[in-house]
Image (cartoon, rainbow, N blue to C red; front, top):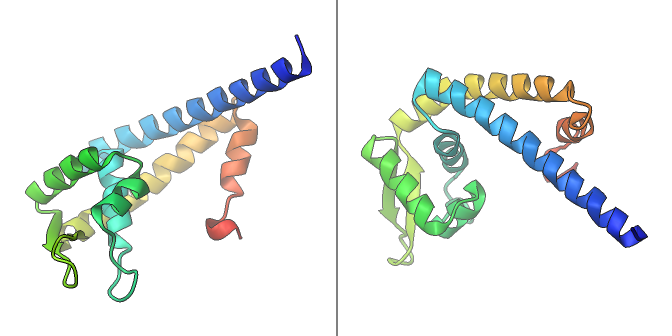
Length: 153
C-alpha cells in the first residue's frame, strides 16, 4: 500500500465516520420531533430557515435558495413546501419585483409550532451528541461540531 492509498483510506474512513455521526443525529432528532410535534427533521429545518427571513434587501429566499439551505433538490423542496402549506404552516406569494419569483413565508401557526419544537430539537441534538461522544471513532467529530461557530468566528 502506498502513502497515497493510506491517505485515501484514512479520508474514506473519516467520511464514513462523519456520515455515521450525521445519520445518528438526524435519526435521534427525527424521532423526537415526530413524537413531540408531528414534524420531520426536514420540515423543522425548512420552518427554521424560512423563519429567519426578513423584509428588505436580501431578506427573502427564492425556492432554489431554500432548497440549497435545507439540502434538498428543488422538486423535493417544492413538495415539502406544499405539504407544509397544506397544513397551514407556510404561505407562498409572488415576488413584488419579479412576478416569476415565488417566495415562501412561515405562517403564524408555523411560527408557533417552530417555537414549540425548538427546545425538543435542541435537546435531541444535545442527547445525540452526548451519546456519539462515547464512541471513540466519533468523539473528535463531536468536538469539532461543538466548537463550530456561525460565520467561522
